[in-house]
Image 1 (cartoon, one colour):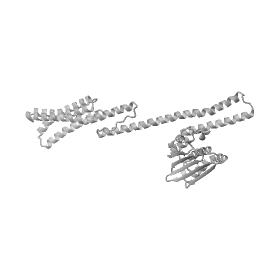
Image 2 (cartoon, helix red, strand yellow; image 1 turned 45 degrees about the vertical axis):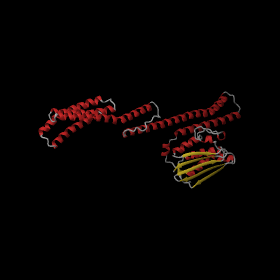
Image 3 (cartoon, helix red, strand yellow; image 1 turned 90 degrees about the vertical axis):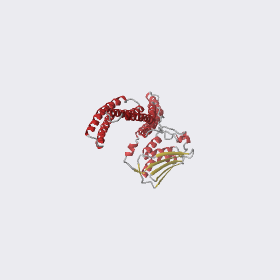
Image 4 (cartoon, one colour; image 1 turned 60 degrees about the vertical axis):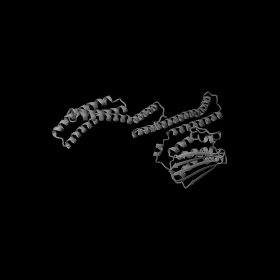
Length: 401
């Protein structure tokens, strides 16, 4: 049906043209007999035209755009010559006038064919570039671009659309590659981090099962070590589960809210005991942001930052927590006076399982900062790290409110 639509449109135009010719003849004062004669010529001409269009629609289905333009130009001239021949046979014009008109029509035909070739040149070249670019994209060459065609506006728009599609495909491919690399790194890191506590558990269980260890003090020590390994594995599994479950859409849909001072106090409560045992000073500064509403998930973010800060700050050091509202954003910072982070490690501290220099390594699974970053970004904010070796580290969180 779609292929017949152009044929139906052209046939309709031909019929409309024939009726228009009869109407013009009547308006010019042609007699009924002359109108009947005109109709007698138009009816077979119309039938032949419809037959020719149907035949051309089938024959031209697989030809190039340039050939179609040439056929259209030639078809108009052929129709005109046929009308001229019919008028000559009807003695409506003299043989001399017919010859003159035929010469002019042939000149018009040559002009039409030349114009068709010239007009179709840019379109054909543009379509060729579009076809070659599409073929390269289909073969996996996502660097292929059409660029400017210097052709018709429709083709230029098609070229821009294809280039934009290629850009989106390239971006999607890059995201997929990064995700695959992250996934591989995650699997490798998980395998490495799980191996140590599992190997320790296996060795101790085998020692107890094979009665290598029997004395109560050693059994008690083994039990404590096994409990520590199980806790480490449990924490790692929980972090992994939370890491893959965090979804920006789900966080945005959450309705639970907390006030900033509640978030800060809950996070500080997590580290008060280890900080007191190390003789650290915990400082909190909430500059006019105490009652600002925020996501309760920020408790997890601050807990991670505070645990790291307390762990890596030497005795008698200071850990400072600050909160303030700046414009439409909530700014949270955690700063310590610890060993700091090497400049080469700053760009990677938020990667899952990444361990910085020995001064900042610890017993954790290495997922805390990755989780914090995922939560902050899901809330529409950003988290940044800054540090100078031996002068402490500073983590800054900015969340829109």
